[in-house]
Length: 239
Image 1 (cartoon, rainbow, N blue to C red):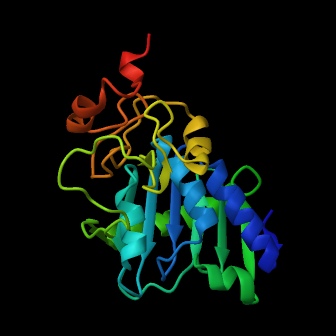
Image 2: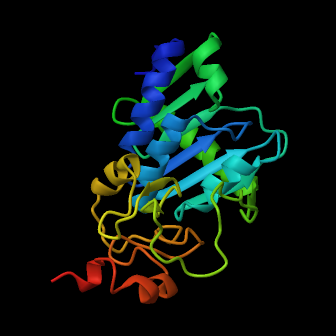
Image 3: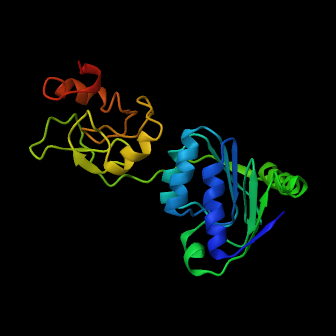
């Protein structure tokens, strides 16, 4: 049976819906500006390689959202003309609501919504799912190509060990202690630890901070590895 949700209820069940997706996640909202907390949950679902669809329809995607979306591998983003609906669903549950995905709505607005569990109301869930998939079909898929330039210094050639002993996190690019054995900042390491895939592809070289297909087991570009392999301990040299 459908359940009525107030503002806090919509936020709670939306977070639960995203975290509970194991096969499919569809997020339909006119404004594609997503709160940091939901971004983290969507990123975790992306690591599981489930089918994620983001449908929007009002404004162009700004650079910060673009940069985040391009980092995801299982998310498909589409533009739907004249979209005003807000509907969020996974393979087991759905929410129809007045709430957009951006932060302001979740903090300051008075929202309402209806929560539907597929196991309790198969017919209603099926109707919502059918309409959501219709919107997916009539939407134009957008190829994410514009990225935000990271706010980090890009050296022109491989870095030797610096006197300040600093490197960068291979996922977010923030400055951390130089150590190829531990190439993540604390927050990114916690996110990586949930799946512990040593070969999961990250974004930048730990030493020179240039764009690079890095990973826990290969945290630097080849040039930085060659320049520093006799001075630093690297995962592939361990033991």
